[in-house]
Length: 138
Image 1 (cartoon, one colour):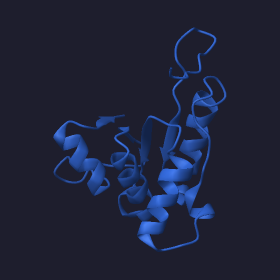
Image 2: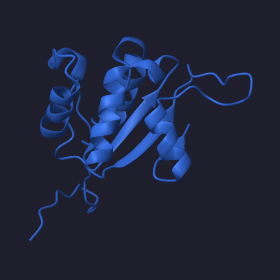
Image 3: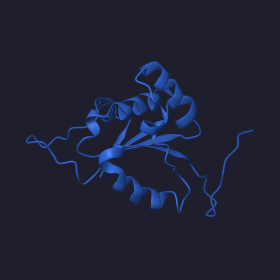
Image 4: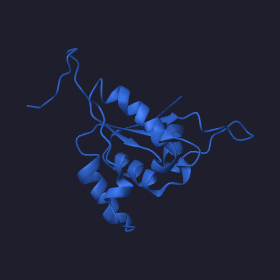
């Protein structure tokens, strides 16, 4: 028998993991969190850069899988102008994919298109949007 948490509207309440560039996009996360955590109790801040003090990729990935993405079924990546180069965002996406969780990329207003009309996004996110596994939205 599976366990599920139901919201006041009778729907199953899903838990999501949020990935974003803490130094550049904290304000967008805060606004998103106010709506989706305060009203729907969907997300909580796990701020990996402050909690895992290691550059050992295997160790960090294991910690992300065990302590941060567990209990969720989807990761939402808030993508701003510098998100593409953040190693923790890349590791969070990798851990999400290893667990077979859903993946959604959300373009923030700070992400401007390049001259060719494309956006600079994390490679793993791009690959999964391109393959049809992940969703990309504004």
